Image (cartoon, rainbow, N blue to C red; front, side, top):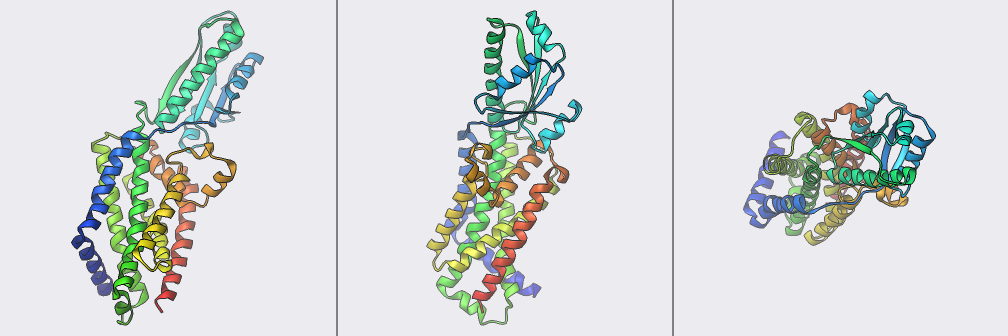
Length: 365
């Protein structure tokens, strides 16, 4: 069986290498997408989850919190965690901002003394961090004017974690890496199997002694390898060209990417069972990719979407993989921080790949 799988893999690689158009799709277009999207895309932000550490506990400090909560920009909640553990909440995405109101806030402000409020923001998303900081500065200025009648010395002392330079590309490129791995593996898997059916070679394979498991593995493993090569190329460009730091574990990233491939390869196999032509397969793959991208949090934060759409995003495996890649690359996240996303990936991979395997096996009998 191993020799059969290797022979099928060799056949798939030769077909890809001989097709110049396919080589352009695999290697040229993703580089173009990475360069264009890495420089061009920005997003707006609302519903910034904020943990408040109020050490003054005065009426004025509570009024300041209410002013931040006005306008649906900040979702303000008091935190029960010690201030020293604030970073853990940012690492596991429990909140995006930690606001620290010092003791004596009310008294010093009433006397027009200098007051500094701590504002710790998750800088993994540079655009969101910049906007959140801008919102906080404006709201603080308005609060100052309301309390004292002029702009007093109350100010915010900022600290941006994970992306201190505030570069949007640091947030965009890891997202693009996930998109490339998804689109390449889904599209290539679905189109390659349909192409075999179109030219009649799939039927020839089915009448040979090749067993269905060997056929499926021989057809999917090459595209998994190509997907990893594509991902590695994107990471190489992101780190060397865009100077994106890689804070986490390479082994964890590639291990969870391998887990994600069960989902994308399964979707590609499923598309091949419902398509009769390569054009149909490409359309279905494109339709899935658009849905996955728009509901993954790549362009628009999921928290800004309508509530009904937010529920739909839970059905999107790319949502979880996007958080995994960004968390590992920018926050050095570990399995302790990503266990929810990893559990979701395991469920998606098992269900989708098993269902697609069974459906493909049924169609080949």
